[in-house]
Image (cartoon, rainbow, N blue to C red; front, side, top):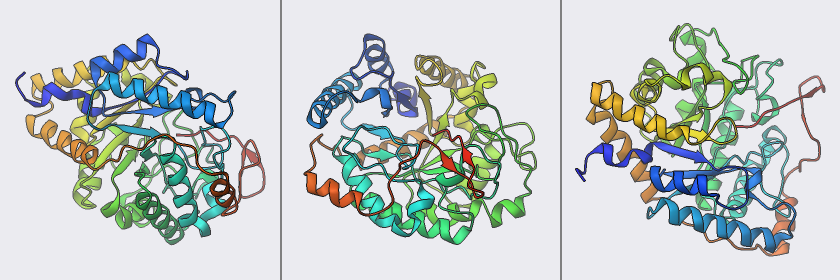
Length: 374
């Protein structure tokens, strides 16, 4: 082994497992070959048909298989866990309402969520959403946001994140530089948000300016901002990720893409240069989940990074700095043991904030809106 950055390209990946409660041969082979920095759990990775201790035992076995396959001292075990419709684990874990419903209780909810996530082996949650809920026609953010005002979003996100970190679970600010004012769902198509830089700085970037100093991870938005970069979505834009996030806002932590299998990126995912462009733009990790595409595509993306390095499109300096950021996060990441929580703790958690009872969100006019997670 040369000891160079090409020896550990797996650090640049977070993989969503296939939707089954045990590790199948395909995923086992993929994890062993790529050795990603971590995995993402989905609803199908939990045994919803079993009682509490039963599904915990199955999950513990699954995570054990994952760790053996990846063979790293530390890995990220991640999940989307925002409340509302964005909730994976079975009962009796607490299912809170949407973030907008517990803005005042953000610290209490953050603490309870982190304690419960740590009890299922999770050390990274893709939350909080720091988008501003400014567009009533937005089909994907809405009540997932803490609100429409900059100050209320910053305050709630800060309290939530601090409580999560204190209880041993990393957070991830999303979706940079902002998904709140779109009218298109990036799961289904590529949104375009025609905001000038002054407006973006005043609104969408304000939560990041206030919060990135303590943020272990930021997730990108698959959105086109024509006035910033007329051809390239934020996930692939050096002007946005390096120019704004890294240089203007001074962010030094890990940047991950949203799931690159989403339809907003479908036309670009097959381009051999795609992965190199993402890293050159300023991302550290590429998220590939079996939910939207075949997770094996991560192997092609890793080959794309190697090819971009060989061509000079991605330099040694970029790869080394990026891998150093991921490695530093992994070195600080706790490994949580799967364990049952006492019933009285769960009862107390459920009393902290409004719970989720509906199957959809509601917009400001009280109309039902379909919401996608992630």
